[in-house]
Length: 344
Image (cartoon, rainbow, N blue to C red; front, side, top):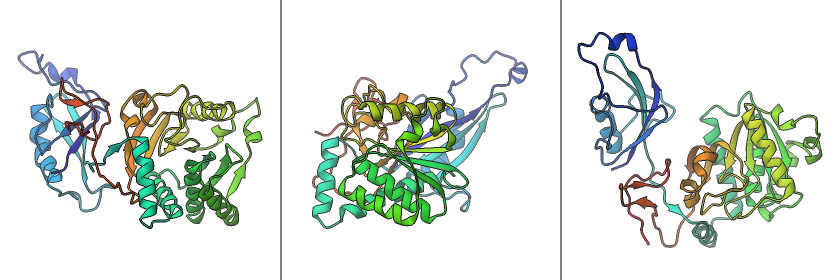
């Protein structure tokens, strides 16, 4: 059975209605806006409200068993539902979603899986195109691209290559997209997609354009896509890259929507630690989740986390999840597994 995520999306508390009760209500189940619960095998999560569960349980069990599409195509994600519970004085709205169980692996394991998939016959350029398509689809489902000005900031490695491939896709979709190269260097596949961007007429600005001291040019864009540093990065970003990351974060604080490709630039993919890293609204993991997404500073840096499957295969498949044996739950608020033992 699939695990089902339950997220508190809206809630209210009507003090004037509470006064209508004969006895004070002191033991009402408390929840917080944005709080997430995981239902395993269709069962009520621990500490979840009994009253709300009566409303949600039939839908949760249907999703857990592989069903869905409760609203005949109205939901963007057919494996989800929006439901409300009202006990008289405290209406709460929930989003419930079936969860794809994606392995959580190390950076080294991801590198090995990439190599194994390429050796089995999938060209690396095709994997890069699939990654870009997955990022595009994640943004498109959230209404990010159309009628928005998007700046894609690319580094020198394959993470930057994902950005160039994304720019080509967006140009073909008539999106308003512009490139910014944070490095003059390219990986082989990145250089290939950059040339395709040039041939397609994708706009580009220079680093010198954002170095004007009087204004942060990145604030002119509605959406910023961070494709600077990949999962293999460790340490402190170099001065030029650090300056770009700081400008991305400033623009994010001023209202730009920030998307990180595969990982937030500057964050360690294994530990989640960072001296300076991009703060994202959305991070689109590519292939598999990495350990760092659920450790260290990940909760502070990542807004929403999703994964896109690009057909990466592991020679020795494994599902790894760090969990606390003391309270039988995962370490990390967004971990896609709620009670899984770590396999070694």
